[in-house]
Image 1: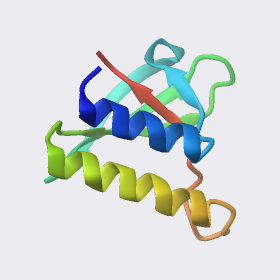
Image 2: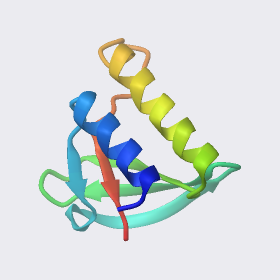
Image 3: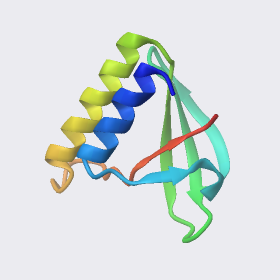
Length: 92
């Protein structure tokens, strides 16, 4: 595990964000692409819930942005105007 992965892992643990195996998703379909990475539509195999998966480019600046976004989501996750954060996954 590299230092960037360590930083994200620490944020996941401290923020009590659930980590899902990537294999728990099906029907993964690219729906958009931007400066930080790609966005996919996917479905949980367990319960058929449709979710968005954000894929980030791996560089130090992006890792800091990911950690910042995760921390913000932890603070406002219960607000009705915020899209719910179910957790995180990693596609090797």
